Image 1 (tube, one colour):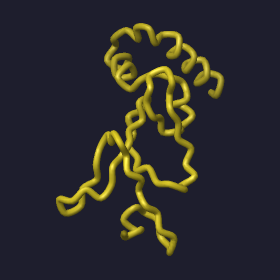
Image 2: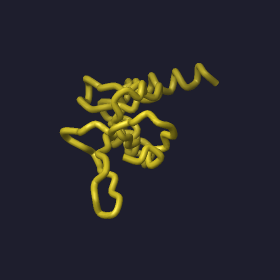
Image 3: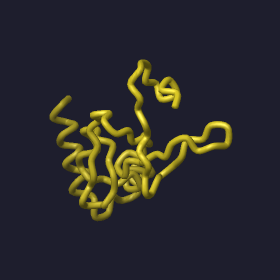
Length: 108
């Protein structure tokens, strides 16, 4: 496998892990070269690589994988964030939304 394809220069071989339920795929010349996972809280995709030492997580409230960013530690699903952005109600997620607003304001 070409390590430079994944932005990993050097001699150490990084192999993408097989994913049972991938959220997406990376194709090269009509051939799947890697499966991706998607964060339930922000929607970002990543290639799971064993030994990468990246902080990832799993949300027990919405039962989905998370990317590990601090903003994604609080459970607010991506669909709810889109609804809020469109001016719709946060529904049952309003407590988490208020918690994130308080955290954001305390850093400013």
